[in-house]
Length: 322
Image (cartoon, rainbow, N blue to C red; front, side, top):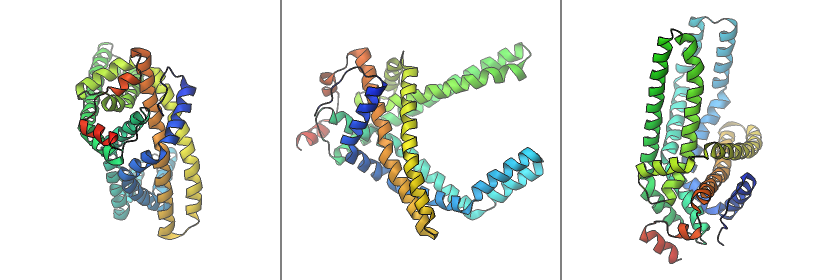
């Protein structure tokens, strides 16, 4: 069944997002499980053990207590030394961060795969998991390159603004007061800008046959006049998904807390992994619809244009053969 394209408000995007999620639940969760499942489960195991030891909680409690009541540098340094001298805990934290880094590295692959599934669905097609992975792998480095270029650009912009404000503050001889007042809002704005930019960038790389540089230009053009709308809808959707996920996670963690030892840790890790990979695609469906909505509003985008988007011949033949 093809998806009816048209201008969408927040309620329509949310409603259609949940419908797309429901219809494509199985292939999206399978994709998430293949790439995120093993890493996320292992990371959750180590995090559950860390929480069970209360090392992190005790460190934060002691640190805040000493900072508030007796801000002595030697005692605060001693609290840090206690934590960082625990080899077992540090090893677990190192492995956890390494696993999360691997997940971050393959995130572009998952984004491209999910958007491929959604774009094929609104054309009435059902691509195989193999086709989805092949397509995502084919555009993986394009998206990674676009992310890197985007980060470099915003980093350079922040440096230029910081230098300019530093010179201005020095010229006015009020740097201690002047700079913090301007730098904090500036960096908040830059962070929000790069977040919004990276929200739409994967869709552009997935849906349009463009390179990394062209993807940046296209994303910039699409976001003109839609920055705050895109961020607002994405933020509301992400918060809603986070609340839903946390409710289920709390129930699962409560049950896992009743199971002693490694079995309890494994149960909590499995539940955390399950609900994370289950509900995360909801946010991606919202992002996909945001991309379509902007193109509809700015380019009169329709299914005919979508059908002519450039995919590899092999991928199309794979879909047609099913």
